[in-house]
Amino acid sequence: MPRPALPLMFACMALLAGLASSQPPAGRLFGQTPAEFAARRAALRESAADALVLVTSPPETPDIDRWRYRTDNTFMYLTGVEVPNGALALFPGSGRRDVLFLPARSRFASIWADPVPGPDKETEQSTGLTTAELQTMWAALAPAVKEAPRILISGPTGDRARFTRNGSLIEQIRKIDSDVEIAPVDRLVHALRHVKSPGEVANLRAAIAATGAAQRAAARGIRAGETELAVEGLILAQFRRGGAVREGFPCIVGSGPNSLVLHHFAGERRMLPGETVVVDIGAEYNYYSADITRTYPVGGRFTPRQRALYQLVLDCQRACEAFIKPGQTTLGDLHRYAVGFLKSSRLRAKDSSGAEQTMDRFFVHGLSHWLGMDVHDVQDGSSLLKPGSVFTIEPGVYIASEGIGIRIEDDYLVTETGVEKLSRGIPSAVAEVEALMAPRTRS
Image (cartoon, rainbow, N blue to C red; front, side, top):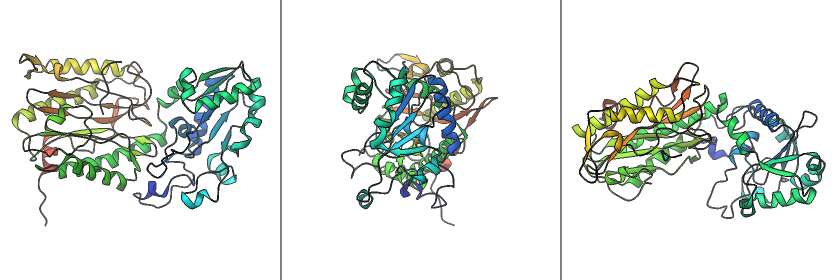
């Protein structure tokens, strides 16, 4: 999914419906070990120095019947717990245990919704955290608030905080100590999220696997007369089969003139023979999102012009893979290299005024973005491609004068020696795409 070039019970049963086992792996929280979450809390506590850290989870949405609850990424990253109205307290130093404050379990609520973690031994055993009832939080935290020179919270702390749930959080802190400094913790957490743990990479692999199955289903469903929405339906079915309870972003299915629109969400337009269709999708699995784009020809075979443009985009992506030097290259470096690669092509196209241009003029978005809990994950283009970081490479060309949009996007893990293409099993070569779309005969 392109971005502008400028700057527990723990898992709901539906989450596991598409997995081989109907039960989560023992000792895991959303696909990760308690030790992974504990290591993050320890690292954050160290970087926060003498500050008290408070991280909260959002309340249930008012329209609870329409939306599946999703907690805040920072809260999930540090706890592995999906529950509304929770709060995690990380105390400075090593003398006190971290505390997870949770609403008391409600027998009435369990009639209407699946059970959620509560302040009890079951939650403590699964998370390794001390728990307490939410209603005791401010009495329990008052001494620490008075002692701490700073309090770090997730989300806004300035004027914008008044219009968020942080408004009441800051008000409660001020009642205890009106002079204490309150600052955002997000920068420290984002620095930790840059390099992925083994459990995070496993979740990303699962999200990519579900997305790959969805891309195959989309390719086989694309035909003249079919709607973009119908293709989206095939995609979502494969997401659920792969264990993903939600998508990382709305499905982008753009056919014909819509292939020129970077974020065209699937609509009612019917596909016509000879068009290209850009399918940019990502399943979210255990809070981690894939982001894979493929471009398909309606009718199953590219025209000679489409094939030449597609091959250029694919060659650009492959050249970018080889250009990367772990620990030295930035996403900005990679983007500039891609622009130069496209500019050096012998292919030409006409812009909207009819003037002939080199191919870099038709590459209108950033080449890459980080990937993780957010589809456009934290950090920016100046951050180094460190071993353990995950990112995308998505070159594209969009030629309005010809009605052709082409984009290819894959997901990569940086290793000590280069990159691993996590989505390498999803067809992308011209011959592979055309073979995937070819009518299948029953034996």
